Length: 300
Image (cartoon, rainbow, N blue to C red; front, side):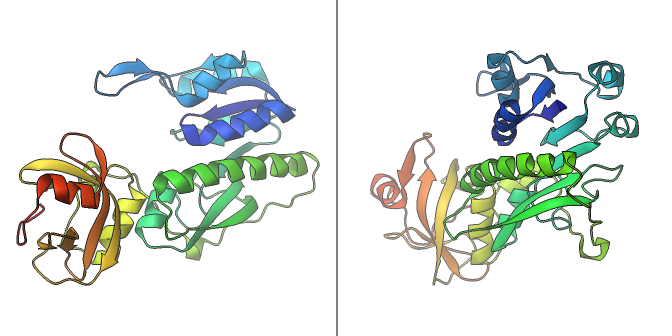
């Protein structure tokens, strides 16, 4: 089978690795190189790096609409999409005889959209999973080919859960494609009445709101790991891990400086791990020794 792969971030890399072993990947479509890091150096997507190492032709169109002619020339039997990052126009969907197959990191129809892993953790979900589906004109609303559930552990954050779902999703994707190509799967329509959505994370969501309940504060830090930040003495710190504890005070108030306990809108959290204003990753107890927070100080 001739596979055209479309994907961009690290999440998509395990899927491409397995597809390269099992099928004839005729090309890889990914997002253009973007500036990244403090120096804003032009950086290739992880999928591109893997494809080039394997000698696969890489395409990086700014506009996917202008790329339809090339797709037709490649004559793929199936287009496989894993976190590509752009909506595919209708004209592309009808090109491959086995359709466009997408791996999505949620148990559809829950958490359709760009940030299913983040939103599931932020909502305090205890389970999620992967779905392999046929792409149609509506966002993540196509018929389901297969699903596999995954537990969200108490210690999971965006990084750990993403890594696990990407590996297990790749395995599910390849198993499903073999069955799909062998006409051994009957696509199942999604239950529209159960649909929920996972919109892209907005910049302001990374700034912690201490007025939220303690459980919500903890889950936001887990779901947006390692990027949630707050202000301590006018300088930014990033919170990497907290635990919910008892504590009462004004939202953002340090109520137990020895244990670095901070009050929330309801309840409190103890800061276990963070990145200091100097950019150093450290335990909460080490931060206490180095910065000597005082009772009544506010994190904002």
